[in-house]
Amino acid sequence: MAEFVYLYRGGEPRPASPEAQQQIMQKWMVWMQSLAEKGHLIERGQPLERSGKIVHGKGLTITDGPFAEAKDVIGGFTLVKADTVAQAAELAKGCPILERGGDVEVRPVMRM
Amino acid sequence: MSEDIPSELDHLFRHESGRIVATVARIFGLHNLALAEDVVQDAFSRALEVWKIRGVPDNPAAWLMTAARNRALDALRRERTVRTFAPELDQLFRSEWTAAPALAEEFGAARIKDDMLRMMFSCCNPALGEPARLAVILNILCGFTAAEISAAFLSPQSAVEKRLARAKKALAQTPGLLDVGDAAQFDARLPTVLSALYLLFNEGYHGASSRAAIRGELCREAMRLADLLLEHGRGRVPAALALAALMAFNAARLPARLSAGGELVALVDQDRAAWDQGLIARGFALLEASACGTQISEYHVEAAIASVHAEAGALKDTDWRKIVALYDLLLTLKPSPVVALNRAIAVAQAHGPERGLQELGALKVPESFEHYPFYQAALGELTLRCGRPAKARLHFQAAQANARNPMERQFLAERAKACELAAPFRSA
Image (cartoon, rainbow over all chains, first blue to last red; front, side, top):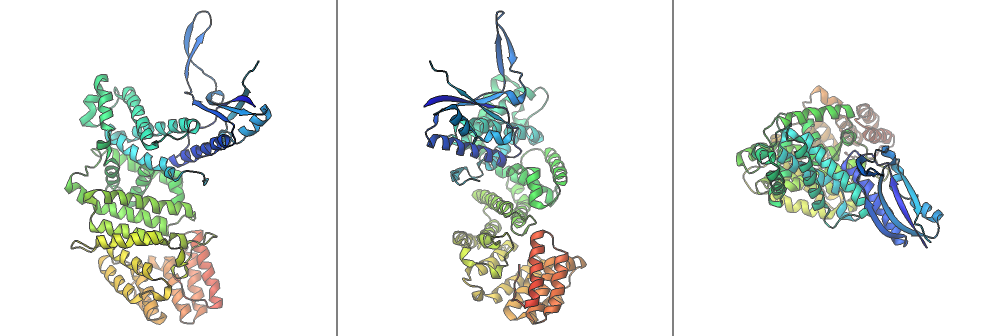
């Protein structure tokens, strides 16, 4: 089996009500649970703040950022394992972020 | 939602949102209610972001409260130059040295104990109309959005939004959360609180929404808030216990009240095996506990009526004479055409449909009541049972024309149809 990182991108406008938030969270719980039960989950990963700093090249200047479009900001990552990138992508189809306009980027971890 | 969800998370966000908004609003001052709501929404958004990847923590409620405390501190630092906060805390919040410890103390377990109850009493402000009270209770304490309230009450969302905005403006002008430790204030406000909870429950039980899920939620929320009241020593008065008993008896019948197809099922047609025996037992325990003190409230009598139905294992075992006597008592406490109508229906069950029709005929009903669908429906049922189906059908058609929602309309249309087959008596 090979390792892959899911990068969660964009999506997730703030839900209207606590009940709606809870429903979204519960969908994520169910999806993560299914990855774990099938032996695909290596590390749940971490959610990321949507803003931070960027350190630039030679001048070593530091600026605020990233200023990507909201839809391109990475909101978190998860480490999984699967036989092929195709299988990893297929598994990502269950991610609830897709229902709310976000994407999952599936990237193989580089090996020698 | 999915069945894989651990049940302790059931409505966690909704319930904690009310509790935490109450705490932040107490600390910030009720005039900063909107800021308090923002802070809590922020905290909940973060919970969503973190939990969906990391999973739900062991103590989600404590996690949410801590997240809210952190967001509240951010908001204090950002806003303290342009706002004032709760008067007794404002000075402490001015200085960076004292703001964080003061805030931590205010978020401590002992301090937050009564916040939700205080918010509930504050929302039951007599300056607000009844619809506004119910709307702010649902919005602030139960985390319902305007869209969810509008679905529950079948009123346009824009109207609900305006109602909420006006009500919150009125709340913002009060000095702060009502002090439930002050006996005089507590006792003066209590009847309004009981009445709001009663109406909230009824909105779920008899209300307009055709979505069974929403109706059940309104009933559950009303019961949860009633429990909150009973947990507070001063709130455990006979009338509150009786109201909680009434809710338990009626909630016990909820599973049998709608058919699989979502249609209303009349009490007399319900599958009594589907009644929730646990809730019925709770109803009797509460009713017994409420039988103290010197005053009998309308909630006592309504709960007693509901208990007579609950103890009848089969329809034929119902003690209708006892029910008629209880309605007589209720009429003296709360004279209303609806009570008189229900009494007449009980008389018909106890003494035959002709007697029931006489009682209905003798009612001095206001003109508006002629358009109350269940007045015409009751006339229809009793006329039908007297063997005059053609006339009964006209009553049902009149009722149908005044039905307030599709579910009622459907129910009444079927009764009108049944007149052609002369079906037995029912009441909704």
